Length: 148
Image 1 (cartoon, rainbow, N blue to C red):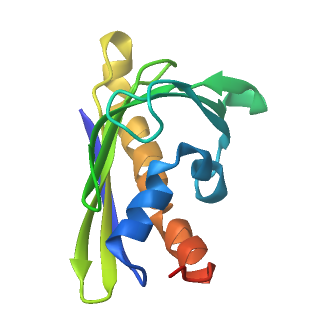
Image 2: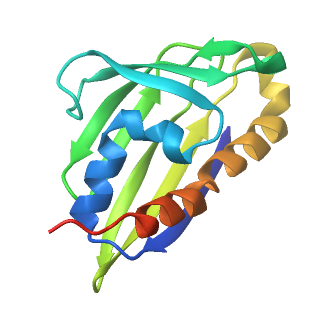
Image 3: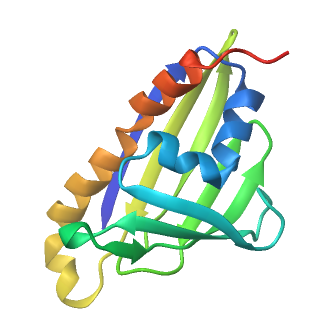
């Protein structure tokens, strides 16, 4: 099994960070390799919502990587699982308040099956790169004007 996690402290309140993360259309703003995200079914940002996501795949080709929100606790947690695509990790964002700031932990887990189970190190490196993009989320959110 491949697992990766990373956390950052963002100078924003937890509900603002949560709402930004919950809107799947914001993913291309801070996560490299995501081309587009749109709501496929369900209520936007709610448990059970399914999003059609297109990522950049090998050779720059588009690859489907649709995901479903499996848990959404306002200001605290968003969990999802990839339901379409060659790799199907599950993961989540976990938020905690630290004074006027928010600590965000991004964790991913993937269990390769069959012949792919020999590539756990490759998937682990890729997942560490994914969760490390939280630094970009921090930069994006802290550069945005605060709303009241």
